[in-house]
Length: 169
Image (tube, rainbow, N blue to C red):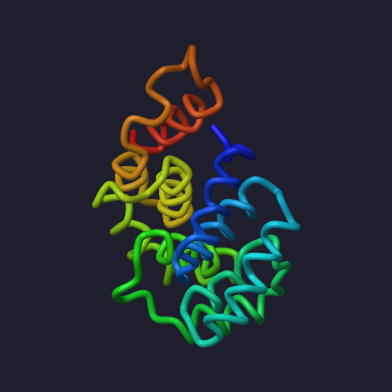
């Protein structure tokens, strides 16, 4: 399920009412996921204007809608250590690190998110793929959790699970 326009509108209203850095960051992330470049750029601009030195402003620049190049991603990842980040910030940091080619740096924090139950299914899938690339299929299976256990509902995810199970043999 994706982000709906109604959810974007509610997030905008929250930003209008409260307007904290984390509210604006959530709106930027939601707009990025919903492929809404106008709302994304509005939230990002407001973050930079009202909270220029915040972690939220720096991480908003790493989202795909901002079109950062690998060097910008690496700089943002290196300048913002993942300790003490909120789950959405940490998730964004991990995905920026992966897109920057710093997969090893992302594995532990992404695993922490997944193990605490704060990750999304896409995070589990990403972590499983990282473990498979490291030739660790049992860890990949653990990261996947219950994803792909119902082949009738989600055949593509079941195929991912089957590939991991074959590697465990």
